[in-house]
Image (cartoon, rainbow, N blue to C red; front, side, top):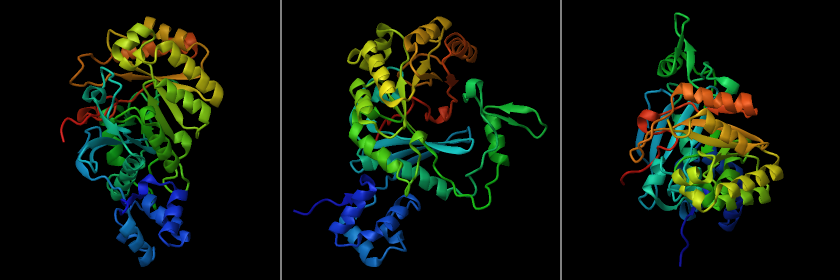
Length: 400
């Protein structure tokens, strides 16, 4: 019985080399094929011009480049965010987001179709779980963003000159200078930066950061996600440094402990906290019933002790529910002496949850408590792509 074609995005570089050898092809061609996959981001073997015809023929017969077709592409009015609805081979769909920041481009990548964690304010959690993504489907999203960058030169890939720095280095809003010299903020600064920035001579846009914060729970799909990170960080391909990758988890304790044991590449770990007591957390994060807060914090401590790395604790600020100075003090006491940074995320609207985002003054006071009373670094997440439902917690697929 013939075997199914291998998706090359599923393979690490050594595995690609082994595949070529098994096809009777000189493995010396591995580097060139790999470069076409991840540097040129080709979509067909026929585009690998410098690969010998016999090698392309063997790959065409036994392998595939698992490109995910774009069903819908949407640009935000903020000028910096683009969302892709991508099709999967089984007709399921996922969402991936390209976000531009000063000096870097970030891809927000999904790890599952839907999510089983059920966080009440998250659109992906509201849609439920369908299946895990394969390694190739995770990797293909990053390649899709890189390909979009290459195709956007020169008209949309800008070397941004404006800074977006707030308290403690946090990105709290876009700020730039108008032609008159006055400061402009938010969408106005975004439009001004896009209008005036120019590509540098010889500039080749490149994906710099990946956040595994899209649809799904990455640690629920542990093995596929870790293989994808290995491929992202291969220096001859996309070539991302491990510390430019962030994995966000709702608090899957077995996965955090496994990361502590296995001493993986030093990517950033972010843990979605959102509440400082077990009862409050279980009310909005159902996974807390399976992995209670005390177990989660013990796992986080074990992770930091084993790796020597701090954890980014994420806190979605919901007006009138968890955005008071008293709640900030509860966070400070909970984290105690753990190596931590708290990322504050004003709630993004979803149809399935009627909470409201905190006001900027409440966010500032919350942050001040963490920094000045407990010495815990804190940032307020810059909101991006809210108008196209591309913000944190907004990704979902309503229909096929």
